[in-house]
Length: 321
Image 1: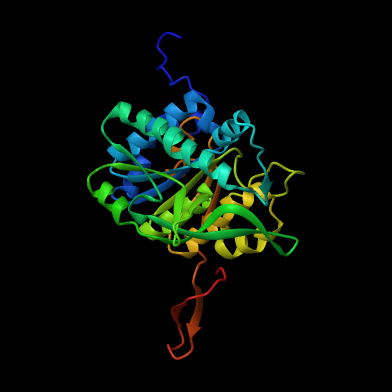
Image 2 (image 1 turned 90 degrees about the vertical axis):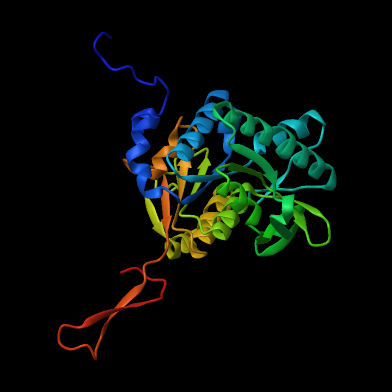
């Protein structure tokens, strides 16, 4: 229409007003580390992948220091299917046999990571791909799922035991964008498939990130799923811990990762709908979307010895004021 400013024409940008509209909100994150978990079916949509890469580059130009940890569930499932290897999940975690582990490693590090690095690097020499094995960045121990109170073996699935962030910090100091595949080494030389949500949370904690963003296939944490699609806008760590045992299995790794991150010192965590183009920018300001997880506020009491007016003293605690 004549005389009207040309819009981006992509779905979902109405929430952010287009990528450039996020620039004022990004100022308070200048110089801060932000860890973004990119996953879900957005990873198989070419338009969404390209838009995500643009957002990462925008963050970098705005002075934010992004780190990407990616998943690859749809691609792994597709490749396993092509090879005639059945996929099984227990409590939201992929059962990983040695045969499946070879495929997981190949798809994550050799396909998904390379595609994402290539998309970012269309805009400049920014992204550097790595796995948790590189420079011993992630060390994992074997993880068991818990079903009805019983431990269940799910194969070469790991839980992060430690993160050495030195290589990631070196890349950030050089102005690069680390793109990390969630494959980790074990102390005994084994290789583990680590849930990308779990890996992103551990990396964010090790880096002391200001923000952890989880992109997924839902709009956030639903208040009463499947009876309602109302999204919970914000939770404290304690409130989330109380809800965690009753969540749908697919949301457990995501929300558990958010909980671990904020309890380890990450400023906040947010679960966002990765199906919305440029939706990652909504984590930095504007109308609230998704579900935010924040640390518990310190308890406050009145110091009885501080006189009639009472001096407030902060106390470490898990309650809210």
